[in-house]
Length: 405
Image 1 (cartoon, rainbow, N blue to C red):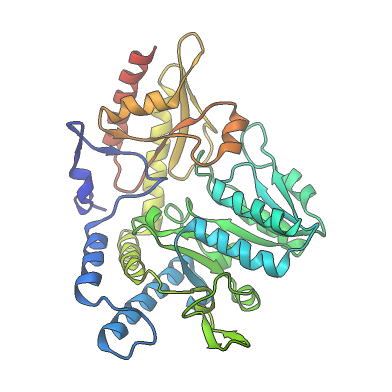
Image 2 (image 1 turned 90 degrees about the vertical axis):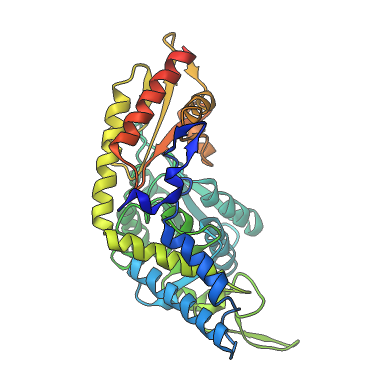
């Protein structure tokens, strides 16, 4: 991995060299991904599938090659199990519509956890409101881990789906999804894994994990925005109805009846983001050239170093301190009299020193409410970050704390 491969890291913010620690929100893009977008529009742009002319055939080939790369990344049984979407949020909404229409009725139950991003809460709430179902929540233990015993007690003959994040977008902690899947499957319950924060940092094998569905976004893994993935086991995707209607997802259309296309196209209505898929394929190539295991090891070392350095500062509270984390560390700063310094104020002062972090509720208000704070400051690392970045961040944070006391 070479920092010079990411041109934005050469930019200055407020006259300072950029230290980018907001990777859980979105990652920066290597030059090969930027070049891929320009190449697609400049050399072979044409609508994919059905076209008999050369450009359409090239675009189709590039798009489908990208699908195979995603399938390889996630270790799926087949590329048919990879559905391209607009992002993680779109993937969950699509699943909530498709699975919900086919499998959920009044009185049935959906289970999520208290750690979830809003995109893994609201679509299920909307489904429950639409179908008269019930949303249940896995509570947290005192150490902010999921209460697996309580989860096991929530499972019942009415449970239809469990949807949980593999990695918390706020705390960065790795949840025991394998155990959750095992317990759910023992009761015949399907499981969706939110992999938005895990796939960029960990080697994920959906067959080994045995999840029924997994969702993710390209932009959190050095790829473009506006592209996501819904993985589903073929036996599920075969029996679920499409969530959207339109072009490409059909086999035959008449005013009397429409029949649907084969997988994966049954779930991909309209013109897909074939430029985005091609660029994401380049991002996957880049990541795999570095090595997923090497990236995971390096980022783990960075996260540990980040937490160690934060722990040396006075009046800083780290959430889920000492827990295994994948990329992100959340904390708050307190004045000497014990009053919380608003995370927004901390973030603004860090920005003025060229350091980018995320502040607020991180689209996880139920978790933030549980912590009884207005928000947190979140610093999140990627493979292009360095210990020098963290040292600069810590120095900037020290200065911010002094100014805010």
